[in-house]
Length: 433
Image (cartoon, rainbow, N blue to C red; front, side, top):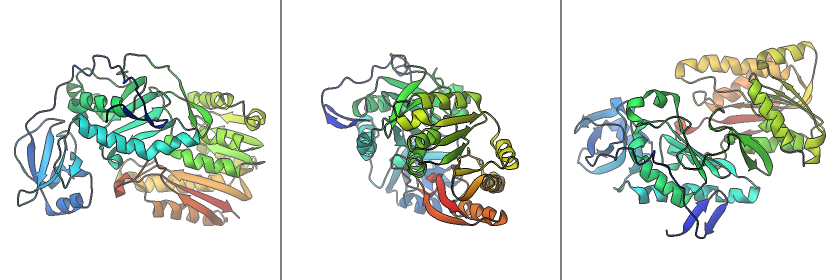
């Protein structure tokens, strides 16, 4: 694999300098050489053989010894035959995150290189679409559970969801430098991991692992449109990369239309609608900094005549309140986009999430012209697709409107789905009679 680098700009064969890391990685502990041997329940074994990437604590029936986060756990069947190897995390109900199943493997830098190269290869064609912002590694779905990597031009953002990655982080980053080099590597930690300071060894959320300091706002391209990302203070890793394909669909629907983008965040859908030739675009988000970024993103794309000429109105207010007020004012739009944040983080929140989606559908239809297009999305994995789409149609009927579906969409190529629980994004495009 010498001198072969898989980058965000396609697959190139050239001599490239790898990332220059600071000493934060050298201070991390090495993974334990002692493996944990596990046996699991028959249902868990069946799920594992079918490719499920998690072993839950209650599924473990035998364990050789106690372990620490990042120890490698080997799962055997009742005849002591190898089933899988994964990262052990005693702090989580997901006790083992599977790295390799069926055939034994040595988990080292070379193994990480192979996984990263496979992930990069899937995304290699994005170069042809003038896209330098995308998800490089989608956790379990790319065989690297509990970890994601987003690329923004020459900056990578690595987000961890478990302390089990900490002892392997140096060898993983060495592999990353060989496969997808970048000038900057920023580390993000999910909220739970930020509190587990005893396992972090001076790592912190938002720190830069490479020596060069990245800019506070990073400019990248998506289908030739320039956006900015704030990977440290922004939501997720600074941008919602998963809606790229749906934004492109909205662009095709927007010519000579008035477009309302609700829960606009930094205006991704809004800029696409403007480039598509919308007459007017209205962006609504409760966050004033997000709306300010949406205005800047419009300015980043003034070289497109349609963006330069569009009327862009913004509201830094609660979406429910703005929709209700617009309805009372009898204000109507040709396209209404509703892309709210995750409403259900647990199973018990599902009913409330569906109620919120139904309310948004009714409010959205209240400001949508007859024959207009409703675009409504959900990023709640706890809400299954059938329930989500059914709730939209039921709400439309209750509002005295009928929906003619254009299409239902899911995940883009850089957000692959390899197991049921990994699916979260769904979106409906429909004409409202």
